[in-house]
Length: 86
Image (cartoon, rainbow, N blue to C red):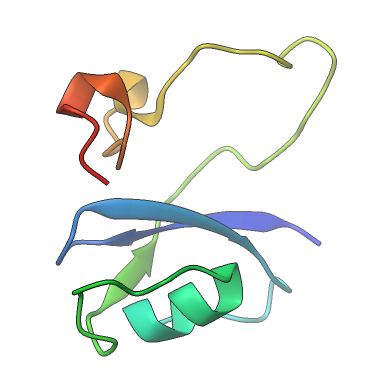
């Protein structure tokens, strides 16, 4: 099953989830339920959008990569470059 990155602009977090290509996730609550994470203080109805990514292809050449989403203009949602805010 492919994985997709979703951004919640209300809290700046990017969350990766796996689902069928025909599915789409529209709210923070739905995203958290799918990812098995706590919604925290963000309203469950907060909108999320799927980020355009190159896909989640894992090969021996990119295992252990130190590249971060912010290296390509996407919010990190927790790496050291944004102070670790998640």
